[in-house]
Image (cartoon, rainbow, N blue to C red; front, side, top):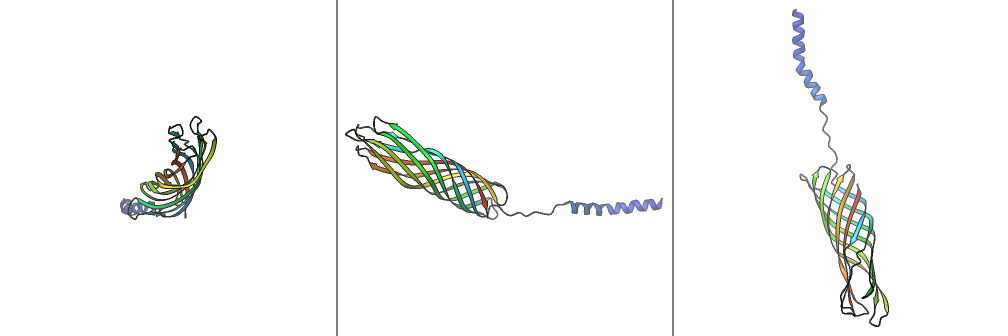
Length: 233
């Protein structure tokens, strides 16, 4: 009986030590992963663009103003590259980005009683922008972006002259202006990122006097919705 009591007391005394040892071994070692929101990156993008602009002819030979709102739209796609920096001890991420896209925006309108047929095209867009964002979660960044953009614009009109003859006018120019937008980016790993974003290009106008005596103004305001995939080096 004395031997049994001694054995029970010995086991009871060792219990806390064994439990503590098991608890220590069960605790996982802390994992310190690479901060995904620091470094240079390169990626691809694709989406859809709508140009809310077009041409306006003022004071035609009939004495009327004509709205040649061609509103071209189509698919876009290209590349972007940039750098991002996670501000230490905060959820803020700052960066800079440059991009270039091929565009297939086309649109036309028909005003045969006044000016004639008009069509416009956008064939590329590019921008250089700053980015400022905040981490909604360790792997999710909401951001705003702004900077300067460039784009091509082609505008053609079959103009009716004062004598009734028709003359084709083609305007081609590289335009520039402010770019603003925002989006959401998700870190799929320490190196891969997916995003969805919206950009608006406030490109400058083109102006000319047509043979009919009308003054033609062509404006561009391009809205782009696109997705992207980046790899951080």
